[in-house]
Length: 618
Image 1 (cartoon, one colour):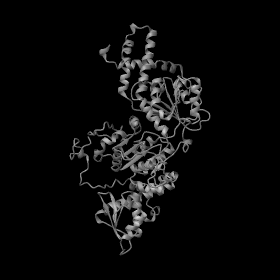
Image 2 (image 1 turned 90 degrees about the vertical axis):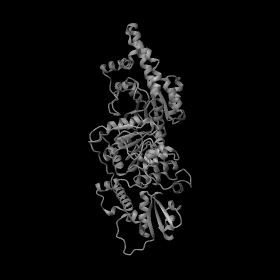
Image 3 (image 1 turned 60 degrees about the horizontal axis):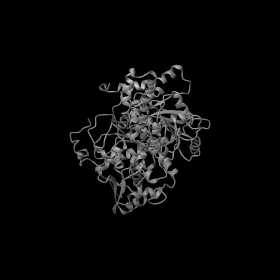
Image 4 (image 1 turned 90 degrees about the horizontal axis):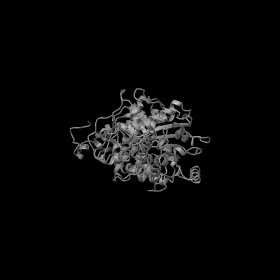
């Protein structure tokens, strides 16, 4: 158990660090180790103000530099000439008292102070000299890393013993980027493997325990991906999914997963938890400050050695949003909100970035962000990529929907009461109802997934089977004005829905799995299967609605599956054994044996449901 005799889990205050603990902690010098590993000893890689220079004899000093642990800042006190110069050059220090100037603990503030002290030498207070020297060493190491990265992308391959996967070349570059920068944003476009690059980094740095914070609907997918790709000393990682808003003693684990909606409940105990690496998936969830969720994420970031943000939708146009996200990853990277809005946005307090391309270039150049689009790496991608994504689902809803099916299962279980034809029809009915219950139980989470894709600018074909499931999609995704081709529309209505999609009047088209033939929808960038069919050929035909002549992109096909219900058996029928599979489903004719096997899946489905019935009901 994660425990400490100095505090009690029943007392929320006991989770907090004791008051005597220093307010500033110097993190493990990962960047220094990396710099040493890369043989970056050449002082010429550093800007002049970070080079080690011998002080001039009997040099006049203009004041002192000290660390204010309570306010978490470096304080310059001295002659008005130096403090006035600080406030002119560094707007963030303007709010200081007369005769002093304050600088945040950010690495760039250390660089600013080193530059300032070339002109105005300061005496570092003896009690703070060790912390200052360590901070300067980290700034020097990071500057060297940035200098080397300008010369080469430094692609590398993760250690085979702890990472069970193969990275493409652009993913190796992303892996190296995450390894070099302990606080950064991987902003690759959706479908380029941000999750696997982050797991490769976890495997390489071996800094546990790790906390992963994803949106609620991706919790199970992170668990599956970690189990698939990560090994710790050759063994499967211990993973604990944190549940509930009320803190409880955590079992020992290598990786913990907690979705964003739980952060506020755990806020008070966060300082006492020993997480060393923090991964914030879909970090745009934190684009709004002032919430308990944002405050808790900020505390987490502050107490972790390494913080990785993942997002396929980095925000450039809304200054307030990108500033909030970056501030979580690397506090004060973009300065205060007041100074950021004044210099980067169209006016003081305004939220619109004046030149988003320059801001993006700055984030990339400073090692804070790496972004690749599908167009950038198209030569490395196959024409069609199929990925299985495990989503959460509403288990209680599924059980409720299955209640009317239970009597039918008992009826099917007693074949003497039915003819062969009646039993076959009952079998089909039971299987259909169970599939519909599965589709309904996961529909809200399918909509969350699709909503994230649409907000990222994707053009989506969403396939399902049951009308009740489509009705839920329409309700949840109404704001995106989806087109519908489900078998309930007239020929004219179907044609109008397809035209709206092709003319970019909507970026979402919902289509029945069995109504996809003859459609030419190559404008789609993603195909999403919210429900599954028994036949691989049906899915291949659905994919081909987008993957046709005129489609120049690498088409991304997501198969969204639930952890229970009918999906497990349907995955087996389709050959969806792993989360990223290579087999070309339905691209070659099925053998007679496969045809017969697919025909038997409905019966196997009913047999599985029968096996879960309580004996007392027979």
